[in-house]
Length: 255
Image 1 (tube, rainbow, N blue to C red):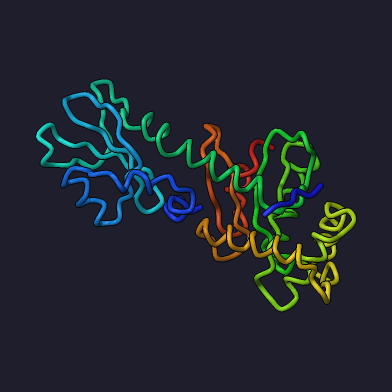
Image 2 (image 1 turned 30 degrees about the horizontal axis):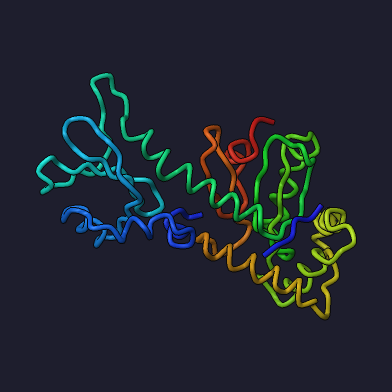
């Protein structure tokens, strides 16, 4: 089946509009000073001890900030209670991680991808795939036990960025009568060249490929495979390159 239509967390904040509204607010001076250093503030939350909490992002990671009661100082880091519980985790998940995951996942669902695996597989993984990418082929091969067992559906977001025949091969896969079968045959014959590239790419297919490439770049990736998946808590995780043997079970789940 093929789905048709038109991270690196910090790269997508602007894309998805999560931080833009927050940045327009008149924050206290210490918060503005942190923004000037590259911190992106998403929102506020109630915190104990007479301080105000701020949920933010910096260098692709959620960050909690606490403004002192007089509004003159900001404390960066986790707040821990007497039992050692991290009081920052819940507001960060609620205000930053969960909304960001949902918005990125929706964008991936709306991209142009080829399904590899059972429709009802319990685990969905998106991976940006170039037909000429040997590491994409390596990931495809190593994922076979999970895919054939019905545990994982890989959704290959097709791009053509690596070589002169990449766009033609990508277009051939997307234009195939049965894209899923075409992808399977291509990956099986990858070492001998795989699918034959199209000489002329239909305008609609070129639009799909351009949109996939733009999404890939907006999410902060520059090469393939670029993989996005959810962890056990439903939070978005990303991986550049073919997963190592150790990472395979983290990405694909229990075998």
